[in-house]
Length: 462
Image (tube, rainbow, N blue to C red; front, top):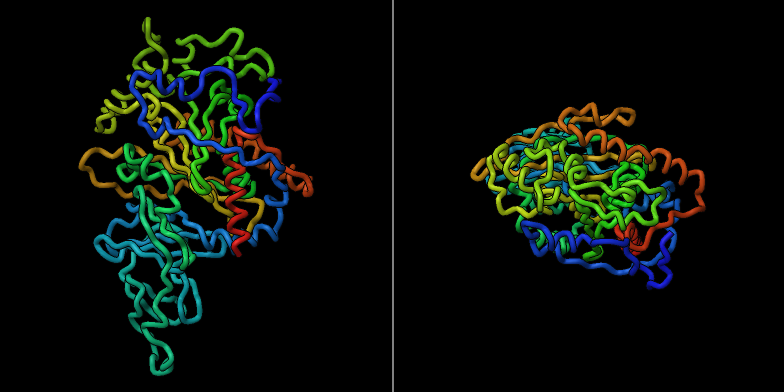
């Protein structure tokens, strides 16, 4: 084990080249946003297991967090035309998102203002010229205003002012529609922190959804998303050498990021890992290139004077640019290859990359403490001038099913199986030690701690 006792808490780092070293050496330079780095030591106390297993804590989250935070409900292209709707469910809450005008998207609680019957049934897309309660037939226009009340003579105490649909905070960014159930919520822009600036060079609103996979995972929503918040697990879970020297950034209480390089790795960063795997001997540049052959590269070997990373990035600019009808000539090696993951509190992940172009969302599965819903979307660049196609319906995968059953995931299916393979045992382990705690690394797992600290702020405020 490396001796890091000479460092102040949180200052120790893996041996070898840093992510910044790799980015500055790249053939095509990264945007400044990727060179920005920000980290603060957030403490080293254990996280109580009860935060993942307690019904009381789960209920507090529902009341004080999910009812007061911004969450993306859908993409704008889910509601492209007037009358298009999307129902988003989170725990006991349900929200209708609707395009009520040419450039107007609104959100309302999915609840009749008469006897509180749910108006639209299942989650997902739909169309409606207006809204009608299936119980007594009260109806509303797309903008939520009252349309008709049967037997209105019996409701002299009801008016358009008092019984329109209950509006919900609704804002847009990056092609996503966000909702917030809290009438006193701060604007979304304050929540997004550095993200609008950082994503300006790779706008997500110019991406199209090519695949949507939704799977139930056998763990609390926090444990489920935390499996994706660090690259520390790569060595054991994925049997992969890269990620040991990943960079972790804490931009504020809502936004964090990691960057881990693809197409190279640091044998020195594995100095205190067990055995000599990938260190004695280290992989050659040709062997590193072979790990990227899953993308269908033109090159099978690295030309003299080149690196696997620069060759793979150049090949993919050409191949994917032609495939998608987009110009990728100026896209940096890092954006082409690296796993760059921004997390937005409480449950959203955004990747600006080209070969790793995902977004994630983790939610409680109804009122179940011990399971979560994981939404995964693939967002590919949209050709210049093209209109967004209608997004595909989610392919639903049950707990016992493999991601490899989703043909659209290709090689990623096996990776997601690995990512989620430990969740059931982790949830069981935490339940078997209800008074124990989860120990986090000071640097590599700092993003997890930041989520819990922000969670506590919301809980204290109420």
